Length: 85
Image (cartoon, rainbow, N blue to C red; front, side, top):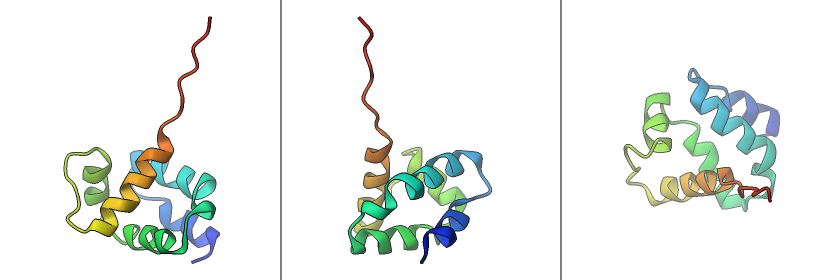
């Protein structure tokens, strides 16, 4: 799937998901291995409520492929905290 289609598919009915998925496509997707790109595309086929529960860690997917791409997305959102001295 090309990047424009991915960005469109990343726009969901929930702002919380938009704030997670769109930046991931913009900033990280291109650097993924091909298998992880495919995992992300499959992830986008999930229902919004399911994605929300997964990202909020209220539920975990049973599929190891979905667990992997979710962890990649979660890890990509961790930013180092700057400490001002």
